[in-house]
Length: 191
Image (cartoon, rainbow, N blue to C red; front, side, top):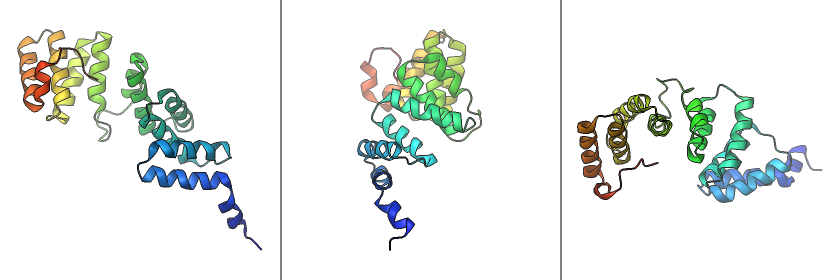
């Protein structure tokens, strides 16, 4: 006689979920995504499965699918900072400037995780033409990531747009010192 647990172990959806988790933990996100989708369509409703699948879609650059999963997660858990950050990042990557800003500013300023949001916000505010907000955000990003060449380079762009040419020159020099190939890159925002 088989127990109820044994029957669940034989369930194809459960097997797909288990295999998806294994692949996810092994860093094989592309492969994991298919297993998670099979598990979801097979009736697995575990709360974390949408997060895992959303992260797999995100890693694969399938932003619309990732956005769908994170939208569902946010409807279920509207105060979850990570889900809001992920949706903001997806919107950032897809060029939804207004949506990305509205998500990323929901993260409390003193929240220790997702500090890279300050860099994203600086780029987004720059694109929106709000150079004062872009300067404020890039200053926070520089204080948190003083050795990231891309942030220094973007600081140069933003400072130049904000009328701070001297500081912009210093930012470009610092970026080039940290990453020499940036010395010859066109002065356009890097994403």
